[in-house]
Length: 295
Image (cartoon, rainbow, N blue to C red):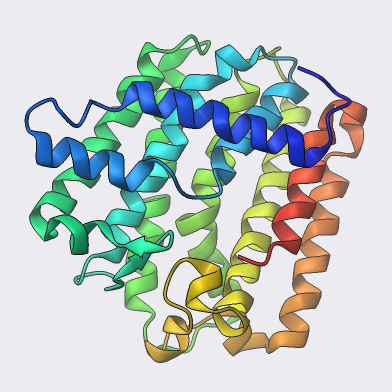
């Protein structure tokens, strides 16, 4: 690793790295059942910001981990994220036809194949994590399972579906997003750090506070972009939250206060890392980049 690399160079290198890891982890499209494997590769490769993988590599650097040790964790969180996007886009969920600037998986391959592709990607995530070199794999697999299940991402999605047309207060909205988005972000940070030196309880608590703030900031930015962005810039349908009557930070707070909330959360994320010194550089840069993103 080179600590002198500019953020843009470092993040591009890590994104390419996990793309290569995913290329090798996914079954080839020529292997039967070809249609399923093609759908899996379509949903995972060649798109996305790789935020969760970047978080894993950045926290791995904080813990002095070799990037090779982080590869399985980075791939696993990206596979879980890709599966969740496939399922989120289905007509029975958010019913979106566009994802990462191209037709959603169920539009390209049909609903049945898309559903199976999501299921298979979830299984592959745990397979990759189990076969990697991460210390204490049983505990890390359990961590990813909790982050993905009813007390994490899936539970947050259930709350999201139930909230359509319902007035939530800020605490309820943030609880939903801590599960739907934040749980996997926290898992990515902790899984990456687990690939390096042993962290103290205080250090793990600081990483959790960082991940919590970053996860919420990511969602507030997402809500602002849903109002201010375009489908072309976002790679997904813009304005859907308002059209579906979903509670968002913008509908609850307004644009100005939502942007102030982003700045406050970024400050919280930075403060949580204060005790780590220079080793937290990439996590700090990543927090700033997520708060300022435009897509």
